[in-house]
Image (tube, rainbow, N blue to C red):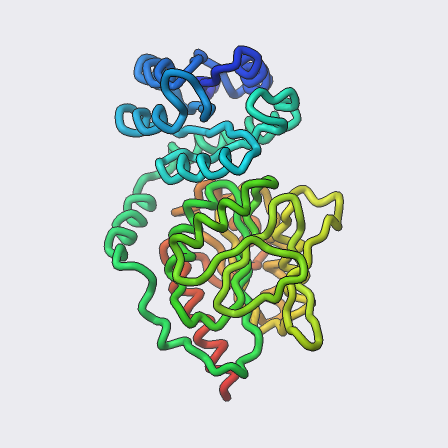
Length: 368
């Protein structure tokens, strides 16, 4: 019989602990080995049981989740899924937790004590399984990535002069799709894009409402290029990174006088994700000449974006899929690769330079 995934559940609410235990143990591959009522108890039980995965609430007495996470990462590192409330404060704290080493997060619908937690039961189970599998991947890729990042602490790539472009250069657009593991991976890529970058950059990160504004602000602090959350009707300018708004699809529309514009839509209603990578990429294809589109698909569960990567490539665009080596979850990029939708497959720490090189080629092509 296959060994089950051993999970520790930490939450100060007895109701939430019971719900989370029920959700997790409804899957035959998962066993909840213990629960904790606060951060201090969570740390003690991690040291005692050495669980495969921990689900960790943020707001707890005695020791909060952020402090507990730091102790866990220092004393007995293991994958941690943050269970966070859908508030602005909760979003900012969640991104702090990701920077401290948490694997991913799940947003509680309805606040700290979430009566609707079972609505996202499938997401919780999938992320626990993804965290478990990620921890068992070969470490060579991660170590190489860390070594490469260590050598680049000086900041963004110094290639801005190579790709600076005259004002009459047509629209070049980079559209990046990402899900599980995205915040960390994007932090390896976006800060590397230099000043003077002559392309529109769109980021479609699967993220719930209330989180993308905080995420964009977090990225803005770390990037040379300005980062903003998508606003309906806003002009999409080159040298700016726009993050799709949680709970909305980001569409690209062409205005005869203003050029490329952002449009927020609830259609299609039946899309599995809002925002959807496929939906955004399709709108880009309809608005920009194919050869000036760069599609990028990074870590994430499922196959969102894979079909449109195929279409971007078919229309003469350039497509990049993150390799299994660095993907936290090798789902979305794998789907693109299997469907022949990737011109190049590369680890995350090489993707910024590949994007810069391709944009450089697009600029030179327009100058001819």
